Length: 176
Image (cartoon, rainbow, N blue to C red; front, top):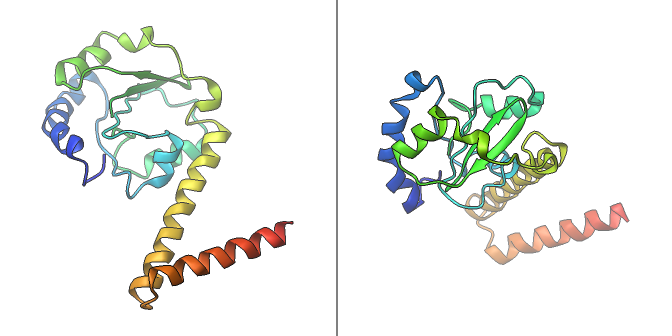
């Protein structure tokens, strides 16, 4: 979710109601702010908000770096119109309605078994998606630097862009 997203705000009461069933369903329910977790939003290719990822408890086959990314947050990532589940290292997406009964049914009736697994190369546990997550993290760092240049040093926007352009040309020249 993102704090500025109207659809996320509309889903919040339904999500909280669904989360009250977490013990009964033997799942964890939570949310991650994609504005503060760019690595996860990149790794999971979050392109619409709110996005819901649901994991079946068996996370033993996830690569250690993905597990680390997920465990930095209060629960595993639960934040659009998707419900994804991972069991034995396979991710599945379900595009269903965003109401409590549909969420419960998806978990309780194991409807996720009927959904085709995400191809391995697109899996959040894949090396490719790990690399994408680092690019998302890098973009967050660059944005922070840009804001610091403008706010703390009083540099105009065009000045910050000029610094980034020169740095890009310089790095490109070094890399050949």
